[in-house]
Image (cartoon, rainbow, N blue to C red; front, side):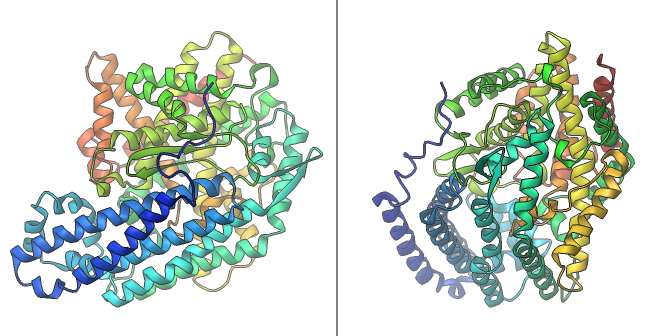
Length: 598
């Protein structure tokens, strides 16, 4: 049997291990030495050869410190995910954040120099193999050079953010671990309660939904303060940066996502036109469930009982690995390796955080997956999703650290591509109408989630940002904004909405990243486009399809989404036609679901 808890002992034996403490002391000492070395920057600015040597040395020293800070932060986050109330994890996370912030403050003068250099001088420095590892990242940031504050101000922003902006996101995570609910006579945390939303018993789903909503309603003023603080910080920082050129929240989000505004506009416009596909999927699911009053408690409902069963964790790993192997045997072997090595944490624990994610250590470069597995088909698809992220990280593990960082739009492409592989393989292998229903149900659920729920999140956040610019947005107003956004996208496909969704969905409270919603939609439709093209090429007898996909993944941290698609698919994602092609595949999936015998 595969283990279901992380094994991180080879990274550090424990949060209070002597090895970890020794590394933290070494990192702090190296940071002090780097500070002394940085004092020589002014003396080499006008000497090209000396500047090159200086910058190379800074990069090498900073890399070693960064590896330690990254690993310690990930270790603390892993433990905090298993138990959001663990005080040792919180304390260690704080120390790691402080170390990383101090490093970035130290490097601010170098960053300022690199972003302001004339193009000819910058290009000359980027021709150096070591410095050139950051060429794409720096060129991307140079596009916003006019948004830079003076170095001292940039350092202040970094320093204040550690216990200011990011503290609000940490407070939300603390709430997740704090909230306790009683459902079906049992006390539990939010993670376990969330899995009950996939119960085949509607009364239990409704009880879980009401308990979760009540739990968040009890903390609504705190979450409202969190959202107001995070968005207020972003708005004020944008005002301070926008003295020369004013950028709104979506401009900045597109920059973070490495897409052009025209791409986002095309994506959202075509999705609005196709929202009826997601609504029809919900209506078909309601018919199958025998419901004429589909509500938010039913959005994660499994198909009728005759076609649903518990899937043990080991079986889920094998299902996913087999599906991956049909496309790329190495990808399938990797999924099994993740389970064998203890790189997946799936067993329920007290005070466990909600949701699922993939992260990675910096040195050695190893991915980690977090889910709360309860044996549902939805859990299987979520596990496949996160293993898709993990495969992405594994494929690029030999690249420089700066090229292993990629935007959320392209991150979600790899994860949803993995989901598609699993759904397609399971449907092809289905031996009975019940098994086919289970898979097409997952496809219909995906259409509803990505074409209706995700855009509703996007609309809500746009409204939140706009109203926060005018002042504080109350908890009651946040409920209204949520209902309005859901009303625009769900329309009559639900009989009621989810007014506490703004509090229950953690993505709105991520301090360092706004609009973490449309990247899922982008990834969903983009991955369908990638899947369709690769499968067509494979059907035509072309060799090296798995390698072509890996090549695409390896470029995600070193070019924009537009350039990536142009290079690997020969298409333009700023044009509606690209998204229409993917939406046509969604329409086929919904129709396949509709045509299955009742």
